[in-house]
Image 1 (tube, rainbow, N blue to C red):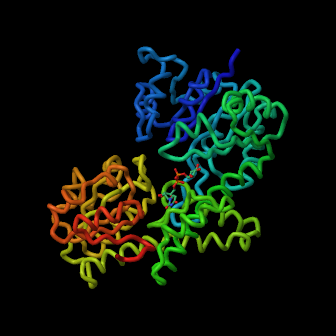
Image 2: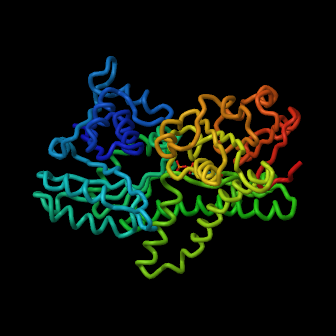
Image 3: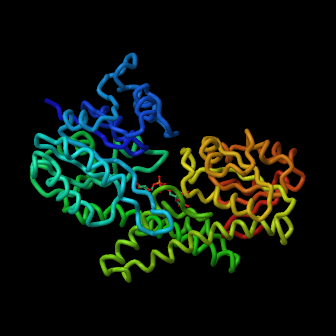
Length: 447
Ligand code: UDX
């Protein structure tokens, strides 16, 4: 009989994983502690914007017409324990308030609520991003709490999906990494991932600490790459160079590669910033903090980019202050094709300008509800055109396709000053300049 799979935590990682497991042919039960979320998902609705996810969910959720019926949701850990052969823990590990370390309380609670109900041999698989050493600790706790004892085994299987590409990244991962302590665990995970492996995804088997570290190392590398190119942008600005050309040219070297070299206002989101900080905190606990001091610099270059955009905006509105100035902000999410505004560079810049007295009006294609909740005091408009109306300066801060497709000539009709600062180096400078705009990007010559 096919394996029965459960997914604990149905945020964007868990909801995607659950739908993907159903797509791979397994019977799946998703668990969340929030009843409203369970209700929504059970009705085939996704509580966040993620391209393709709702379609995948509706293809499998029990009770939806034409669906496979392989996917259900519940709030009951007892039901989950009785149902599953393999349990994936997908809860999040946010940054602790005012600290670098991440908050493990959701992971701990997930284990504490599931383990006492595990009465037959089972595999619990951690997917959350955790400080190295957590898996060993949780394996011991599992064996202690589960009635079945050491037959409730643990494996660690970090997740590398990107928001905006979550479905594709889950069904066709670049690689599958599993940290295991037994052949049985490896065998079960090979069964779970048989289809993507047959389709070419490499399957890397390792121990717990290495599996945990692969995730933080990968995100640290990506963050470093972005801050490297942003440091080059700073130098380009001082030397009148063009960071976009520079990135293109160094990217042709296959050892460097062209991806993740887009200079701008830097990285944000629920992963990269908190992961590098949690990594530094954990290295400190392990006495290895010197190995990661460079990440402090990566973080500070990144944060400097936001401040630099605020400075460029201040210059654009006349130099002294934002008082009485209208600032249009295009973009609120931390990246396009997502409604996620966690640690969003765009909203951070908007918030700083607002605090300095500017009249900020934000528009984002999908992130408005979340932005309003997080920054209720900013102004919001229903369209890009309305946000730009009467603006002293326009800031392009999240590179949605919709913004690249704006018609600068038509937009120029609603603002007389026509200054645009491209915080993502993503707009067509010639097009904007030809339509009479002063276009300025980051790390590139001014005209
Ligand atoms: C990241 C990792 O890519 C993913 O593998 C991991 O599982 C979770 O964290 P995500 O947070 O969805 O994924 O976004 P990502 O595409 O990595 O972008 C992160 C941030 O970096 C965004 O704010 C983006 O705008 C910024 N970025 C990305 C740049 O500023 N320049 C670049 O060249 C690339």
